[in-house]
Length: 102
Image (tube, rainbow, N blue to C red; front, side, top):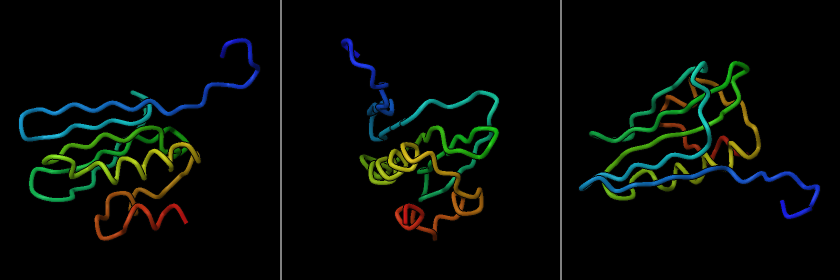
């Protein structure tokens, strides 16, 4: 940007409050890719959007207040690292996303 040869590598991020629910999205999903859902509580969940090769491309989450905020930030780091977590690990809410960064 601005005459530099370095690529712009920021991960897009969006949030919106919808009454008592917070929606957060990070990354850019591939419509042809697959999704994996992780339930984190009653009426709260995260959806992981994977590319054809299993690379994590985007994450969407909805929950009360800021319930999904921490997981979305961790997922942003996973996207920046171009990680390929297993679908089993992503869907299992007993597995901390932070543990997948190690």
